[in-house]
Length: 261
Length: 334
Image (tube, rainbow over all chains, first blue to last red; front, side, top):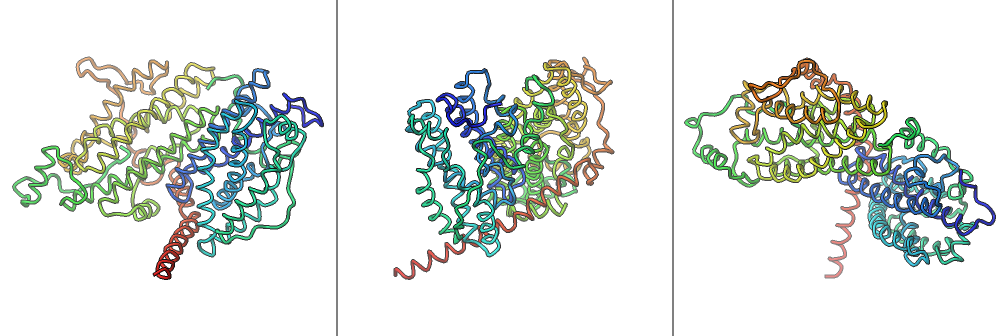
């Protein structure tokens, strides 16, 4: 088990932790999105959502692969994905929430993409060249995801009364989970001090501007309560949903230990 | 043979002397291997048969997402998960090409979807079988896609242009699907005892349903004769089934797996394998809706459609608002 966040992690511990956060976000969201495959409301959306899932899984392989390499204990992207328990996961709570209806899935995607694009953009200037390289590749994909999720949020918000109601409900439901990625902790502070990553709080202003632009055009009301549910990216307290997701995702690896697939 | 038992006119091939001059000219073009394009004249029955066949094929791709989609969230590695997701996504893409090909014949995707959901149109019997272990992802790729390729490769030469072009694209992807399926089987067959057991079990369960994919013998079928004259269908069901068996048996041997047919043996004289027929009673049960998964598969498709109605309506309404705003802005500017 990875140590829960210590008050003063070493640089290497902080770097592994930071990479797990990036990789676990894409792993868990990629998994959630893949749950729709074959069940989306229109064929084009089924295909597009699978594309997003594929991009996220690909990014996971890079981030978790690098995390294992930096850690130096022989763990691979696969062993990190399939053999850790809930408390060792470092994704934000937003991405582990169940899909709900297609509207909530798209709103969650938009709220994540808007952050992801900013974070990856800043990471292309990381002092760590390996991180900058992955961020460069992933950033192009994330920009496309954001274009797509923004368009759909706007279309459904400014659509029928029912689609608007559903999108507003989705936004209200997800709102308490929006603040977490911007809350800095010891890991973030160390990464920022080393020039590896931006101070997460520094992304908030631009994020809010994206939200105002897109949600405004979608005729939706942005909730004002600044309260943020925390505990995902530190691993201190995930939601009950993550355990079920892992039960399904890790089942084969757990049931047949050591088998090669 | 994602399209099984497609009915044509029911009257057999029309003799040349009974054809109108237009029909004769049409048949001459087909005999000369010219492609028929959407705006060309075609007999009504040709159009109807093609809509049935392409529609059934498209529905098979869409319903066919479900048995493999069943394992995406349980794929054992990140790479396997990505490959499987990409594959199931390809099936959706195939459905899209085929619905587009059908649209060129004057039937909309929504109409075809309604026909699927109401049970008026069918999809391939194979997708009514459950996928129970990870080895089934191998067996589906290897056997089901393998059988599909048998039928689809000749259909690249089919007489209707849009269908032929869709098949060319589809075939490129299907051969990748079959290889990935065989690759999974290879891993399993060379893996632990439990994995070998899964691989053999998957072959046992999918062998006969795969043979059924070609449909019952159609040597005597009037529908098939007309479809073959129109080059909508290129080979008989029996020819394709034999070809599939001949190709698959050595592949199973290479995997060290046994085909679940005690009467399977090489026939030197024929230059083909002799094999047992599948249980055609089971096939007709599956076709009439009594297969192991028919109810679940249709429920999944109906839920996707019904639960997605608000989404489709919302986006349509938005597109309409945008159009109205653009028109108003244009009027104001003038």
